[in-house]
Length: 188
Image 1 (spheres, rainbow, N blue to C red):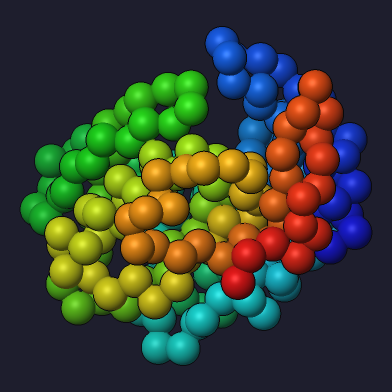
Image 2 (tube, helix red, strand yellow; image 1 turned 120 degrees about the horizontal axis):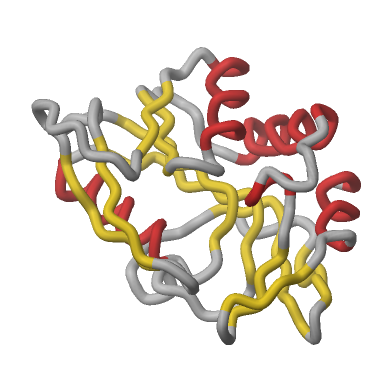
């Protein structure tokens, strides 16, 4: 995970209110995402995630899409994108997601009761988006086989007491405008 580690150490920090936010190719699309970094991340996800009998990969728009697409291509598991736009299609389920710096309504299609799903995302920070997704999947009746986030921003999050476990590739914190690696192997 040398490329991911170094790219995080090099990430610029911006402030959104009281929230220190690192700007990174995986989570923001800037600076540009190099194929070797994406390849490293995808290989690590495939090695870490429980992919046995997974029917679908589920990811929120927008920054989970590139990671999940690459994992889908490597595993032949279909991909479902949770969108920020409502289409009103049959079976569409809405969820409200709250992050450390925004709130949004999101919509899931193509996940049904009994589906075995892998949930993938770019960053786990406050846990608001991930908790909303996992709660919605539980409501649908899908079986979440595993949950993986590339980067975890250390500290309390909404999943801590919710009974959900998230595997991560690397854990960081942001202190005094600098990314600090707290666990180079992540959780799980």
